[in-house]
Figure 1: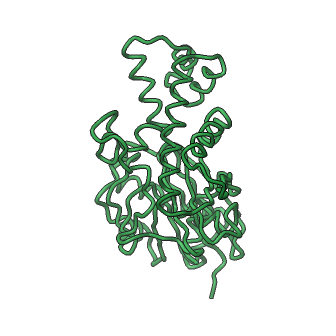
Figure 2 (figure 1 turned 45 degrees about the vertical axis):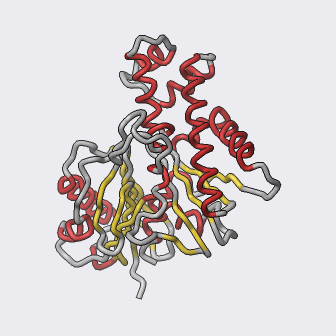
Length: 318
């Protein structure tokens, strides 16, 4: 029998969000806080468990009142075991029995399902968002990192071990560029993700190149893609080149996925969507240049917006 509540957790490289849902899937309560990149995995997940308890307390609910807890993580996950192999944006969370440890943080048994966050986002958009009506879909979060969740025949494809879709770590220029948290240089993510493009810009500034990005970021103490966008609007050369670099590698990424899987629906979500036409108009131009045929390929924006992660994490339970 379905119980009164369920919980969905979206752990990201920048923030962690937790949602409490009613039995009908309606989001009742939501909370969010910054992810602690320096925390050891035990500390990190113990804190997540405490926040879950706090959220239940708001509704005066107990563990016995929930169907379970679904968790999306930006990690390589052995799905059947709930074991995290590695996490490129939270590098201390690796070789960790996350499901078993998390379960031990509660004083009663509770069903817990852990999966990659691109997989949870894909479930959210397939069942409730921009992927409805498609048999096959690629969910592509573009934010601190880039990845994909693969839907085939309306089912999530996880692969042999559980981390199918970690396409941001496909190699495009091995042993060149900046080292990624995946352990390699030259993966696609290392060239065009939100966190990595900032590192490329910082390298150029450290080498003595002049850019408006430095002064725009001064008030915030750290460069972000927001500053790159602001400088782009003022025709800053480094900003223009940074966005073009992102567009080129994203177009390669998407085209390679398309010719490999022949899935024609791409659903995008994540913080880099705020770059709008500065980035994605150019990505589309390059993709179409590589593709060069008349069969339709759809680029869609996620409809579940900021709640895709927690909605999809909850969907893991059903």
